[in-house]
Image (cartoon, rainbow, N blue to C red):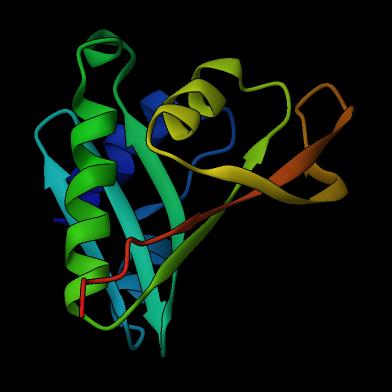
Length: 138
């Protein structure tokens, strides 16, 4: 399974994660994946917080709603595991991902300056985004 995830990640990112890295993450406590043939989302839940570790969708499958469906499924599963909020980091220049997360209700909670290293040597800020899950009615 991790080979298939690594292949998707390699199509989706300039600096992809390999199968061994994905396998190690999946073996970590609280980590789960929601996968589709064309994409996946990797989440870690610790106590009442969840973190999107990565969301990868094949370029050929983008703009069809798969990313939104993966995020929604991850939120549902994280909430079922006890999380009441979710965080992620996204490159400031990743306009499409930022729009996806904004549509899902994420808001900017911080910034990590120079967090992402680009192949051309440039560094890009990461925006820390957060989503508070709706609380059940009493």
